[in-house]
Length: 195
Ligand code: AMP
Image 1 (spheres, helix red, strand yellow):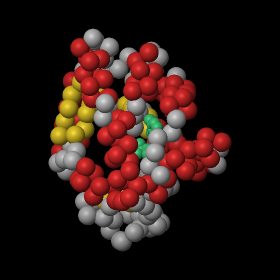
Image 2 (image 1 turned 30 degrees about the vertical axis):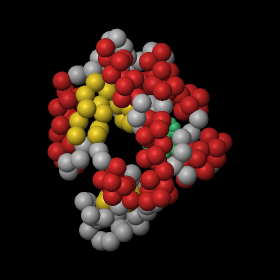
Image 3 (image 1 turned 180 degrees about the vertical axis):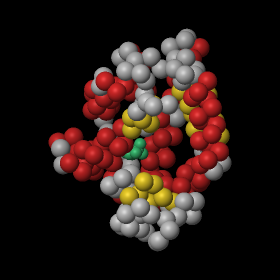
Image 4 (image 1 turned 45 degrees about the horizontal axis):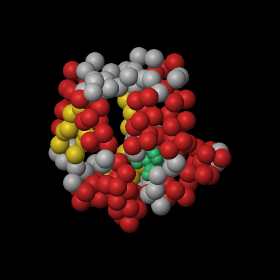
């Protein structure tokens, strides 16, 4: 669709990598699978959606994660055309995340079972080593899921109400348990309808 994907997780990981004050503040929270404070995240996101490449639209990934963030998003201006709820069983997520491996330089994502690299633990293109995100260790994934159920899941009702009061253009739940290609096709069709 030629619009940027804005991932608060990616922005925070870059800040950690660069050793900025934000990165230093966020690192221990992220490593434990907790949430970075709302004011910090809201400021980060507001600055990003104000950049020129977002003028024709953007896809938010990993934001909002709390009710205060969602309220901030709806109050701060950029209209939201569609909210997609990706529904996946917790145990499937534990397997997906704990088996995930990434190539830090390119952001390419692999999975030990579902998308293994040609050579074990090596990036297909560069042959460089793959790493596991610190917060993809199984114990941390389980904590991230507990945080999801407590703080993020209430957004389902929040956005359903926001749809009723026409504060957002659409809300669709999709089953994200099938394989990547199938979920991607379903999502692309839903996004195209809301262009
Ligand atoms: P993600 O890549 O979206 O899984 O995010 C990785 C980590 O970054 C999360 O576990 C949080 O610690 C932090 N993070 C990312 N987005 C947010 C957000 N919207 N609110 C608070 N913390 C966030």
